[in-house]
Amino acid sequence: MSTTSSTFVATDGEGYERLMGRWSRLLALPFLDFTGTADGDRILDVGCGTGHLAFAVARRTGAGEVRGVDLAQPYIEHARHHNEDARIAFEVADACALPYAAQSFDRVLSLLVLHFVPEPGKAIAEMRRVAKPGAVVAAAVWDVRGGWVSNRMFFDTAAMLDPEAGARRARNYTRPMTRPGELAKAWREAGFKGVEETTLTIRMEFASFADYWGPYEGRDGPGAEYVATLDDDARGRLREAVQAAYLDGEADGPRSYAALAWAVKGRAPA
Ligand SMILES: C[S@@+](CC[C@H](N)C(=O)[O-])C[C@H]1O[C@@H](n2cnc3c(N)ncnc32)[C@H](O)[C@@H]1O
Image (tube, rainbow, N blue to C red; front, side, top):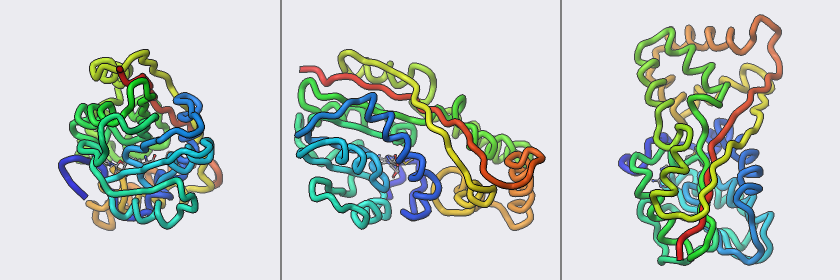
């Protein structure tokens, strides 16, 4: 994986599924309600990960063609392995240097990616370049600071135990494109027409604390990246403190946390 075009640690497709794929699959639905779909479209999923947006848009769209690109080879392999639709193809590519001709897609979509691109303006310019005139170009990112309860529980707890976690929390909650209005501003500056921003909501349903905590002991995403730096004692202390936040003094079992994403759409200019 290129380290210059992505700040997301991407190692293991199955690990990503437990961390995020199970939620991006849910978020893809209101995102597509917002972007709209049309039969026969040629669609690009930028930063497709393990492919949930590409799969969801193909399910909604008759005929047409879907391309998914991501920097992470393991995610692309996972997506290919689970793809049963001949209209969808996945390839490794950088959002900042898309391997497609100008004006070649009817819809250019990106789910939970732009906050992990250090220079998101480059990716947005590429999304505009490959969009046909009038094409819908849309993106969503988590409202990491204000709208993601389960992630807050982890980073707020970790920051109380370790200043390094506090520094990581600050980086995590000030990622590009995650402040109110930031996506819409970037879309207008990129020249898109009829720009609209909205908030999308899903609920993250965990079966138990083990289900919630497991991905933090994995190898993908910012939380696991931090946990991997801890020795066994520090990891145990963190796990115990986060568990207390999860349990709220009640028995272990299911918990449901709201998660909000910012979404933007506009039309590529003629
Ligand atoms: C949180 S995941 C989202 C994946 C997928 N869109 C989803 O919703 O499940 C972020 C993804 O962005 C990808 N990514 C980050 N920067 C990228 C870039 N410059 N080009 C392509 N993919 C990128 C990462 O490899 C990772 O798969």
